[in-house]
Length: 105
Length: 190
Image 1: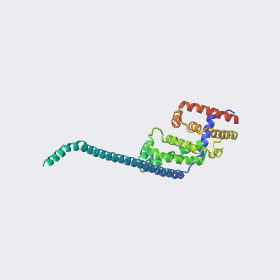
Image 2: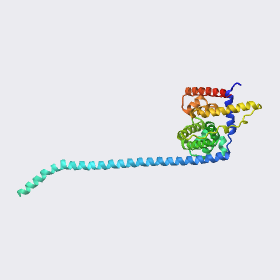
Image 3: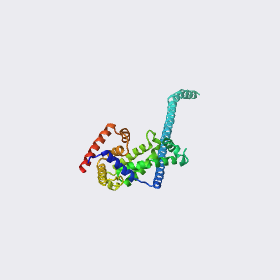
Image 4: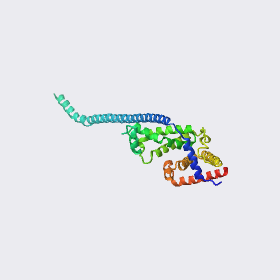
């Protein structure tokens, strides 16, 4: 007997097609369940996303605050340095002269 | 936006997808309901296990709900679902490599489901179908998926190459090899 493979496969497929009978109510229940689970997972995913964004914003805020503090301290140090380097030498002659003047009296 | 099931007939798949992507549960429900059997039959033919197929359908539908927003509607919704189900099945195989699930191909077939007037012919045909099934369970799942998509689901090589992400040439040569092997197996048995 000659083998007609295409035809045999077609019939094999037919047996599957005729075999599969799924109850409409069961399908509806399963779909509803799947949608519920799907939305739950989506919500969870959204929460995780929100958490990541929150952490990133927190890091950014702390980094900015840190930079601001550093900048503040930097400016303060520069101010002190300026006072020491320019202000003090400027004050010395005045101090000496007032001392000399006081001595003469 | 879709509010009533009666509106279904007036809507095409793309509008339903758009509605579902906006969060319309009814649209999502209808999309899945319309494609449930296609998906279940495909998985049943691929796994030859009813329980496993049902589990995979469930997981596929959940994934579809989660990732629907990323679906660009460049293919049919059923094709997209099949693609998800293939990945889900591959994950299942990876996770359960050691504990192989029980396959029951023999129970799947009703010898009288395709009966003709000729009893002898029917018996031979039934035998051939069983052999095809046995053969399908001996080949790699990857190859079985291609086989089912081509010969049972009627997809073209172009579509299969997109679904399983392989070149068309590879797909064709694989199918040729699988068919030749199946022909030999069947001829030996007959």
